[in-house]
Length: 281
Ligand code: ADP
Ligand code: MG
Image (cartoon, rainbow, N blue to C red):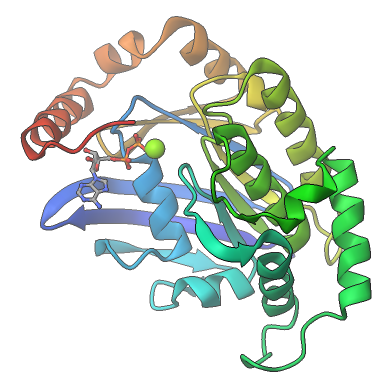
């Protein structure tokens, strides 16, 4: 049976302020979903909540992995169960080398019952795999010796996230604006890499991917089976690749006109964001 990640009637709030207002979304392994929408529509919040970020209140709904509600699972449990998220703005971990970080993370995900302090994947085996993946992604080996995201350029951070995805081989991957801050060539390479990793078989099935993006370039090699548009904390339309292209070239005017209530919520959310002085990067 195809494995599924299903979000059902999800409502999310921060400090009592609703941000996600009833999202339904089912991703099957082997499918590519694109999630688009204006800034502040709740895309990153949705992604963070799927991964188990503790800073949000789930006021209603469920997130189910193969039918099991995972809302009570912490982020580490979700990662071990095969869910992965590439951050829009990943954190730097000065003092921790990429290679060590990846060796720990990879071991933990591949051996979910491993306890802290127990054996890691043997160095030689790990190095070989890391080197292969890095060469596939056309990354310099020097990269693995640097501290995680410490002083990385925007582009390097995104590539580090893709390398993580390649090593962890998740069942479901959520990529939050993995194209932001990249030049055209880098987006092309990222698009190819994601496609290559996504098509690898794991346990007989490919990855299920949710790509959050503003552009259609990342989708060049990852044509979405479904494109979803988020506005005011809801998915207001779902279509195919043509919808992604439309949004990229035409923007969101038609969407706002077709969904005036959600557009009103969007306006309210943006206004309260201004009041609180929360910047939109
Ligand atoms: P998107 O990724 O679509 O641009 P976000 O999910 O980042 O949207 O943000 C949606 C709304 O939720 C914005 O108004 C943002 O300010 C608000 N928001 C998100 N996270 C927090 C938080 N931790 N605290 C307060 N407000 C937040
Ligand atoms: Mg975002």
